[in-house]
Length: 527
Image 1 (tube, rainbow, N blue to C red):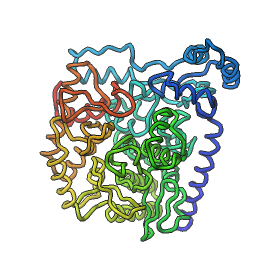
Image 2 (image 1 turned 60 degrees about the vertical axis):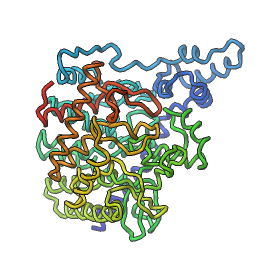
Image 3 (image 1 turned 120 degrees about the vertical axis):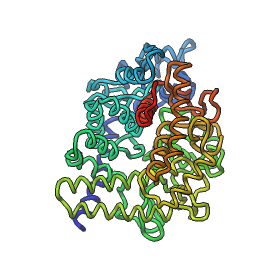
Image 4 (image 1 turned 60 degrees about the horizontal axis):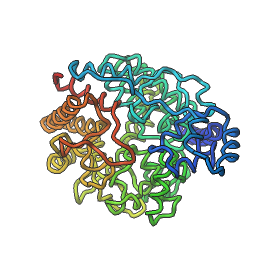
């Protein structure tokens, strides 16, 4: 056992060193373009801050900066025209695609897989641009999201499996294994400006899905990437003292270890630089703490939500890094169980027993710290303030999805969903309307799926079916009216478009396509 612990510690140190080295080699746009980057973003040359960081420089960064410094103080200088001259703007995904509503949703989704699929990237794209090349084909979400995204991809892959495209599912798993082997973890997306954080760790579920399609030998094939990802999320755990935290890990007062969301940087996000700088001015937190909390929420995928706000309403009170995240720890429980299974497949039963033991320790700690016995709900736990978070979101359904809840806990959560979260178009993400996109009145495909499948796991079939049918009908209604499937939906007002957040609602859309197709097939719904 001691030898295994040393291996985990060594893997964590290697991951940390690797991330630092690779980050130095793959400079992000802010590091490459300094004051030019700041000026472009703060002057809002493009309405969407992500546009500039996705541009491809046509010349070396040094020559571009030299030209900028020579020209910027001239009376007739036009910053936007300068960018157009020295950079190639990113293409809009699926901008020339027009759907035919008459063909139905299933045919639309099957066609969209082709539109949203990207071939292996050319290796020279990483020379100056922010895109990190991937060796195998992959599916992008759509709209402004021109690269692969980590947790999005699992739900996209569910749809690809329904479309019987096992080869593309496997290609995407290979890409994520490649990223783990190269960086020691899976970045938020394959961009240099995402190299300081990951996203909810769904890689083990992707391996599960591929194993269902191809056989249990898949667990052995991807054992090493699974171990490396685990080492990333657990790095620093061996040196922790009770009540302390390091990166993604926290040791509680009873010496149990759980995880939080975290980002290695404490600077504004490059893709939302102006938004973060302006938001920091409205916060009483020191800028570096505020930026870290903003980035940690981005790692959670729920950016942004009242789930992370100390006052339940305002972004300036964000405290993501203070919270033991219930969804994250459920995902890491599954990762531990998947690693154990990979050892079982290869006949290494001592290692299997060890990771099963780690999973049971996590389950025990999660049920202690993320189940509020007073309100009888799953929630996040604030380890700084030693209290259960008062915020409830659909992330509270992860313990049901992974089978960690007792029957009594599951019944309580089902009643809560029925009484407070159920809406005409599905289930709402939180009970607060703050103007943030991961709050009311919005619903999102991944959390709809987690909720439905969690309820089904505990035999709450009637409620699960009710949510699924309402969600499917809302998706179909919008499709019939617009010819599009959207990133998110207003589940409370069926005649309104979802909104909130830092950018307009996107269409495409990878995870919506995947979840919708899965649910329509599961419940045998016709077009």
